[in-house]
Amino acid sequence: MTATIFRRELASYFATPLAYVFIVIFLMLSGALTFFLGGWFERGQADLLPFFGFHPWLYLFLVPAISMRLWAEERKSGTIELLLTLPITVFQAVLGKFLAAWVFIGLALLLTFPMWVTVNYLGTPDNGVILAAYLGSWLMAGAFLAVGSCMSAATNNQVIAFILSVVVCFLFILIGFSMLFDAMKDWAPLPLLDAVTGLSFLSHFQAISRGVLDLRDVLFFLVMITAWLLATAIVIDIKKAS
Amino acid sequence: MVKVENLSKTFGRFKAVDQLSFSVEAGEVLGFLGPNGAGKSTTMKMITGFIAPSSGTAQIGDFDIRRQPVQAKALLGYLPEGAPAYADMTPLQFLRFAAAIRSLGPTADKRINEVVEQLMLQDVLHRPIDTLSKGFKRRVGIAQAILHDPSILILDEPTDGLDPMQKHEVRSLITNLAEDKIVIVSTHILEEVNAVCSRALIIANGQLVVDAKPEELEAQSEYHGAVTLKLADNTDPRAALQGLPSVFRVENYPDDPKRVTAVPNSGSPIFNDIQALAQRESWAVEEMFAERGRLEDVFRRLVDSHVSNSEPQRGAA
Image (cartoon, rainbow over all chains, first blue to last red; front, side):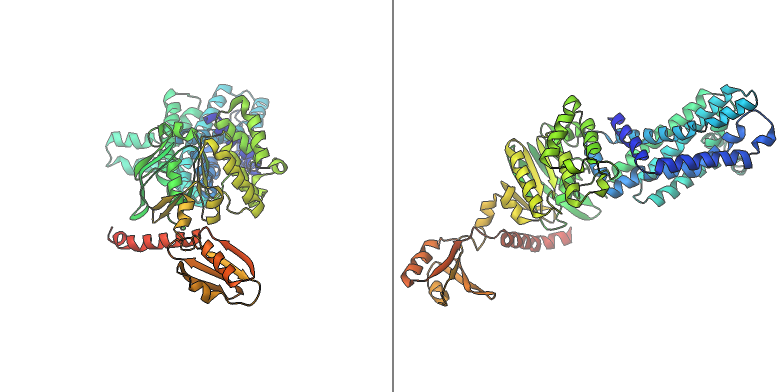
């Protein structure tokens, strides 16, 4: 059942210009950021750190653009009533739609392979690190997407869904920054400090993209995704009546 | 079997559906009637498991829609209000999706061909649903609902937006399907009740007003057995008709002065009396027929009296 919904959703991305526009913008932005802002050539190092370093910021705006329609559109067009009266559970629908969006973003990510080709042509990078960074980037995109899915379920207005997702995702990036740490360290007990900074998308992503593929970082994103998807199912159950 | 038990739904302080109970057996076509906002769609949404009732439940076949929603929903075919469908898909893709999710397996293509033929969708199979007319959209929705040959079919305003030809086709489709199934149709078109329903359920303010066969409803009309008469010449039959003991009152039509309608005294048959009168008076009768009753009339009267009776209670609640 989840697979059927997954296939329908994935096909729907390509039924409209959405998929192509998204992929082109994603590739152009990620390239431009890497070369111009990241100074990739000037660094003279055979790695993709500047490329991956911009991904959290790129996802911050591009992933909510994908996720905002997940449920808001279903509710607006009334198809949610059709979908949820089919013999499936809400979670199967949530999971199918999420996986389609995640695979779609994964596809966009895969299409950045010329970066990898270029860096291998110019030097001898550590391809293990690059692979880990790709995986980390995709996991992080999944976490953004799961947040966005929940925000989309909470409203039938796509613009509101977009803004809410950006704000919540931004918070999850922000708590990895030292300014928050500094602001909290004087009064907050250590376990709380640990817990809060441990929720940061940024620090877990950076750990993975340095090539340290720690199971805990991978688990963090998977747990994050699961939790937000469960929240999505609950929000849909509560909100669908209205 | 569909068995609805004390179904209620409140939105905040508003009672959309209030302690509704009824049951439907195979072979019945239940017409679900009521003024706009009476709770028809809300009831259907609860029976099909889209929204959870505030209290009460619905038994779908052997399954309780609240406890075993997936099994219950597998028995249902549902056309939601407004016939929503994925706009970017073509009807063929849409039906294939429905077939896959209903696990039709190898019989899917055969069934899709059958429903496409039944609903005459051949010409639009490969056009995005977005670009289809309202009538075609509705038929795509119905095709989706009957695709898996469900034993229980729930259609929310299936003929809304269709032209008279299409209405007729959908009605005969429902009648054909109904032989061994349960069909629940919501409508606000009263002629539909006569055309397809074997039973009518009228609700108002979320409460059951009446549960009766269409004939029984018609019999409640003051026009049940009323005789309309039109004479060829300029004779005025009104005084003579009014003189009959079985006639309650005589109505005339400003736009057609030769036509009169005699309303009987509390359902007593008057056709024979009037026929005898016409022979005695040697009227040149151009047209004469008895009515079965006017549903509109009955509907309005029942709903009005229900609403005015229950108003004080609702205010206090």
